[in-house]
Image (cartoon, rainbow, N blue to C red):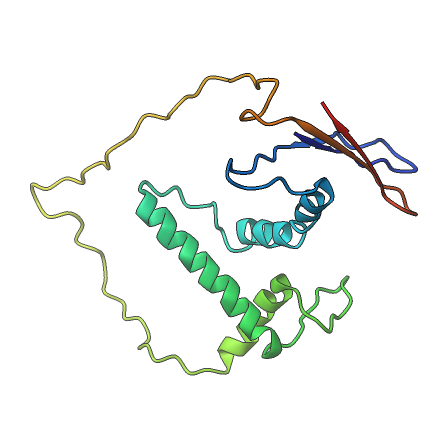
Amino acid sequence: MIQAEVHREWGQPAAPLWLAYAPPPEQDHYPLREVWGWFTHRWPIEPSIRFRKQHLAWTLPRLQTAEACDRWTRLVDLAGWQLYLARLLVRDQPLPWQKSQFRLSPARVQRGLGGLFAQFNSPAQPPKRRGKAPGWPAGRSPQQPKRYNPVKRGQTRASPTCFGYEMLLLKCFCSSEQPALLLSVI
């Protein structure tokens, strides 16, 4: 087990973060400094996940099958790549309280896509008004989708050892000057 703590010079300290590291049995143990490096490399990934959830509606639809969830995830990934590739084609359109950016964030690129799309002609015909919809055919009613009961899991207690390996404790004390690492084996 790895415990990461941040100690600030002012303000309340954040709650400690507990992480688990258990290599496969056939693999050698990595030094804790290298494992800690893996943890710090997650910081560029987390903002992209938050952007996908907040701006690209990754978790918004309530899909009923795993295949539909996979298709939706692929569409969100493609939308993210489209924003990445369009970053050089759009102009920055900051809100009145924002400063202009040279390197646009994905949210700024998304905001500027409307101006890019306005430059293209639409291949679709304009929609035609058809009047009132006829509704369901006579004698046929809509069928409700099959419902699944939620899976409820009980809480489990952690054992003193993790998968038969020794538990490792890593505390990182980060200040404005230098981070210090304290290692101890339990």
